[in-house]
Image 1 (tube, rainbow, N blue to C red):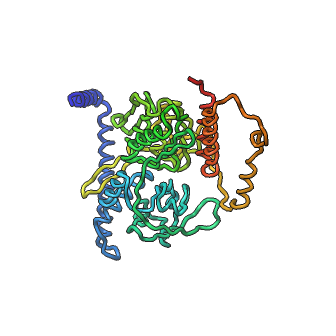
Image 2 (cartoon, rainbow, N blue to C red; image 1 turned 180 degrees about the horizontal axis):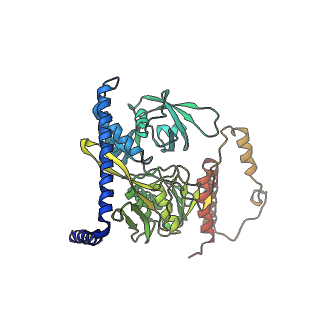
Image 3 (cartoon, one colour; image 1 turned 90 degrees about the horizontal axis):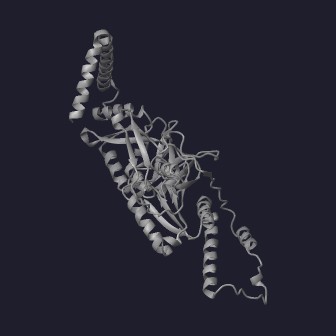
Length: 448
């Protein structure tokens, strides 16, 4: 506190020494600015009163003021806005991992609602909503001209109720309607599974459950594999992850880094800037990592990707991320509402900002469109084509005497896992590519 007071006093003294020649113009400029602000506030008050007195219908003064505040905030950038008491409560609920709705993260673009990403397993995801879709109408009502919060509010409703949204999708000639049944969205922040010898961590969002989920997921994978030495690496799947809590992004990055900077944030004032560093300890114990991203990977997921990429801790695979490089602060206000205000930009360890640019993968891999009609005879023919006659299939072939029965069984088990992992290409080509990279790295790694 003393240091702050001393600094302020020094500034006052220095200012006094300079005022002999420039104080007059400075005071005049300051007075002009204040007068201009007061004039604008008087203008606002005049318009407010005229609307209340002369508008064709009686208006709710509270709603009028809230609309004015929201208009002021939304004019700044797409992520600043006013939250009334209900919206503020909904946001707090969402960060805890359970809320009602469709299950999509959205932003505003060209006056329409653009889908950043559908959340795994939610009604929107099951209905086929995709990253990059534009929502132009809700229940037949055009959303153009509405604020983001107003449009989102129209998509809210009782659990079990139906909503029809009109979607415009690139590559589809005409807009089309999608019917969705609202439901309680219970987000499982982290899902884990073993693919061959590769541990896959699917992180869908960054809420209070994320870092504990990463810890638990790795523990589960190690147990399932029979020890960390049986795992060749990890895939961190951040595709269609819209972000969330900055604190959880930092913890998740730290989980795989031993040291160094994770992220820095820089605000308008130097005092608003911060730098977060990793602490010793790597949950993956140095195993190679591949991070999967796409155009639906935004904000907190880009922080994790950027940190691991800059430290060369992970190979990033997929397509360019969304490019949201700003930090929003929730500021509670009178009346139980809050202001969501963009207060800083964040930067990756190398000092780069991904704002509007996104994170570029080290290896670009597009997800091919699967032909849903390629079933039945075509699929069977493709499977038959992969089956080959081998020496072992020949009658009377001599046996292999270089391996014991246990070694043969181990080899066959490994081959079975490899073939099972290869089947993943039909289901998820990008994930299969990531798994293949880790298999390749393991194949050329020095043996202990």
